[in-house]
Length: 171
Image (tube, rainbow, N blue to C red; front, side, top):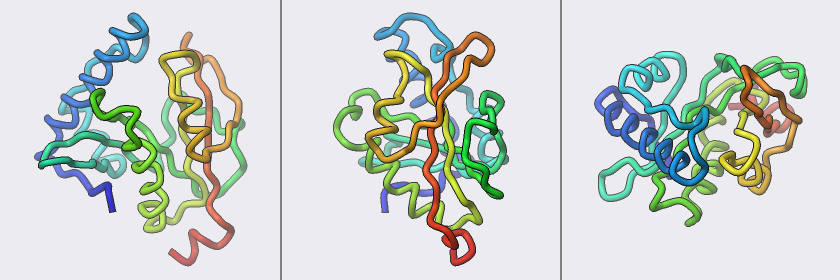
């Protein structure tokens, strides 16, 4: 087990991690939609709408993600496989010093364990298209490409992982 459920007391540290990742992307790729700082208020809102998880090392949050049944604004359902109960993976972030060391891949592998506790048929997500995005990473982790879209001027790629038939009912 890698990811654990975050609580309200983790909101500041999660917001700081997400802000550090945004700053790293901005320093690497220039200013873009990814450049926005995160807030504790935004993290707490995500906790009300879904489940926010964290990975810790030496007591500090080094990775985070959220699973929610609520469709994000930038997702176009018609691009995905028709399922009754999709989950959406949003706000994934890995501490810049820990990137490219397998932590993100381990987090996504742990999502399979976490999803077993939900009545869900698929996990869907979007990623920025281009160098600042993680599309190749999600594909390498077994998420199937489902095309993409430009939403509010932001080019996105869509990915999903389907659960085995009957997996949602047996969970």
